[in-house]
Image (cartoon, rainbow, N blue to C red; front, side, top):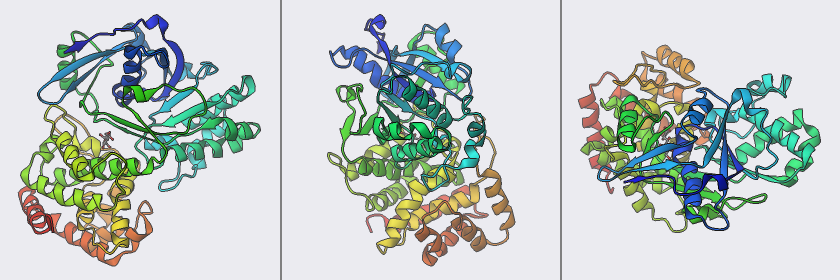
Length: 479
Ligand code: CS2
C-alpha cells in the first residue's frame, strides 16, 4: 500500500513547532498532523509544523532538497504500508533556529531525550551546571531549555499570546519536568517574564508510543524499495501508535482526537502502564537478552524461555499499576510482547540499553519499590538490575555496529572494575546509586536477590543463563 500526500499543502499554515526532529518525531507526532491534513476537517486541517533541530545531524538542507516531505514505512510482518508525510513544512537547524519568529505558533511539542531536560536525575530540578553556558550567553542558547526560554521571553515582549509546550519524551511526568526546568532557568535569566509564563504557558504531560528503531543501512534500503526512491529522512516503524495527552492547553491546538489521540484529565495511569509494561519489557530484554546471546528485541522476545519470563515479569509489573480507563492490563501486556516480536522491526538491544541510567529507574526501579512496599519480593526486577550491573558500561558493538552509550558509562564501568572480585559488592554498589527510589536502595532482601542473580549470570554461558531464567520462570509463572 502506498499513500501519497492527498491535501493541498499550500493551505497549511505554520502554527505548530516541534523541537527535536529525530526519527521518532517523524514517525509519530508528524503522522498525526498528516492525518489531520488528510481528514480535511474544518477545525484541524491547516496545521503545518516547523521543525527545530538543535542537535546534530543537520537535516534542513536534506529536507528542503527532497521537497519537504518524506515517507514512513510500517510493517507488521504481513502488511507493509508506505505513507508520504507533508506536514513538516520547514526544518531549522541550530544555526538558524534562534532567528525564527514564534509569534504565530500556538502549540509546540518536544522530543529532546531524557538528557535534554538538563535536570538532576531522579528529580524535576534544573541542574545549573548543565545550562551554565546558556546562562552566561542567553541569546545564543545551546540547550533546548535555554532556547525555549529565549523564545518565550521574546514572545512575552512582542504579543504575549499564550502557548502550549508539550513534552513527548519517555520521561516520568514529562510536562511537570519541562515546566519546572524552564521556570527555574527563566527565574535566573528572564525574571521579568515569570508572571507571564505562569499565566500564559501550559505544559501538558503526554504519553507517546510507537517503536521506531534508529535507521540502519538495511532499513533504509527496505524503505526506499517499498516507497519508491531515495529518502534520507524516511523512517521505518511498527504499525501501532498511541498518543495520550493531558487536557491542559493554553490556547488553540490541533484536534488530534480526530486522528485517534486521547485527551485525558489524569495522564499518570497511562504513562505508568507504558513505562512499566512496554518499556519495562524492552529494557528487561535489553539487559537479560544480551546476556543470553540476543542482539535485537525480536530475537529475544521470540525465544520461548524469555517469553515465559515475560509472563512473570509483566504480571508483576501490572500488579503495581492502576488500570487506565478503557485499557486492560493483561491484554496490554500481551500486545506489548507481540509488538516486540514483530520480525520486521529490527530494534537493537544495544540501542534500547543506551541511557539505561535514566530509563531503568522509572521502568524497573519504581515498580520494584512499589512491590517491596506492598510486601512482594520483586525478583524479576532484581534480575534486570543484576543484568545491568554485569553489562553496564560495555561498549562493544553488535553485528550492525550499534553500541550502547550512557552519560554514566565511565562511572558504571569503573564500578564493575572495582568490584569484579565480589558479586555482592557489585550488586550493592549498583543498588547504592542515587538514581533508585530509596526503598530499592535500602531493602536488604532485594539486595540479596540482586546478588543472587549477579552470581548466577557471572561467568556463565549464554545457554546456562537461559536455563536459569527458564527455571525461575517455570517456578513463578502464574504462581
Ligand atoms: C525504547 C523506546 O530505546 C528505548 O528506550 O524502549 O524508544 C520505545 O521503543 C518507545 O518508547 C516506544 O514508544
